[in-house]
Length: 165
Image (tube, rainbow, N blue to C red; front, side, top):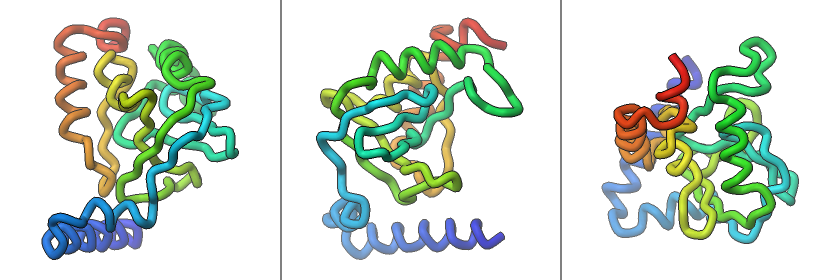
């Protein structure tokens, strides 16, 4: 209940900020979580989690990939492929991070949209069928895009949509 109240308050604050400062909302929102540039990915934990050269663990916002290291679920269908694709996209590369409303998740991981060479990794993973579009409000800035890309991937039987039931 307490978490729901906090989430509702964050949504209200963001909505009021957008209404009162329509031209400045993005700047206000990102002042507390400024974009990070020039950080290198040193490890890929799985399909939606990475570690950076500064020691930070990043969890991608808006997506979920099949598990590879979950203590109770084991390795899920297409989990290894999603992890491998994530490695191909980011391992050893310099990334830019942008944020949504929440700074961290309940496990202490920093929540971010991850960009490599101007392309959002979160988006690429969904588009190519390596990830599900999964909303965790209030962090829903790109959720409509992710859901549209998931529908396309599903329709075209890309990735996990072709391999898993």
